[in-house]
Length: 363
Image (cartoon, rainbow, N blue to C red; front, side, top):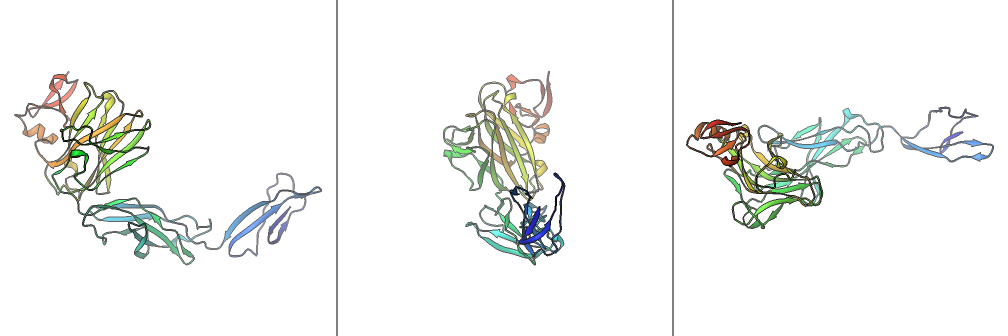
């Protein structure tokens, strides 16, 4: 058996079948070395095997896990993890790496933001975060004496001035009141504007009709500033087909720091006739956030089913918050569940409700 890297490196005479063989190449060149291993017997040469190895310090491969996230003061930062290997699978000294961070323009071109970064993060506080809201991505590149990696992109984040309260969009006439709404999806369809129906008779809503079973889509707002208001409340209308097994979640992203599901609607547990329902959710836990982003996330059980939303509002309204219902509305005879959703008093199921500012129990 012969091992070659141009010249013969090692000739193994009569090795045993299945024997593990190895050899050292004392004259390997810096860079990629290609080796050919060929077995011989009295009938001639067998099929050759080829393998490559990189010798010396390699050019770094791209950094991993590029993430744009938020700080408690409302600014953004960019973080990443160091590459483990070089572009050619060879050795890199991670302690000798530096990084360059880039902004990415609308045409996809990377523009240098900061270079010679040591460590695995950089502040984005120096960027313009004013004006109309827009989605932006960033990039990071690893650099060493051997060369530069490819630039790897981050997740997208919203830049620009946050919307202020009251925030309200009823999608009247099938149109958006705010420029920043977007939908993400796993299947062919996502949330889309519709003028076919509405909860408030203004000829508009948003709807996600799935083309596949178990399809998932989200409908996400822009940045919304609560500005420390005392009783921020989210309200919206959703259309129910009881027993459909579809799921709708309302989530709040706190300034790209963390995300919390504030309401889960399981349509398989909804009862009564098909129609519009009204949801009320207190957002008091987020009132000190620099800003929030609202997202509706839905999974459709069967192809052809739809989840429809309308009349979305976030406002400072003590009378609609859960705490307000419990403490301040003794004269309000409407019935709410503990999530703050208005209920039909003639068809209550077993559970705890709020009426006239007091807790009632239906057994």
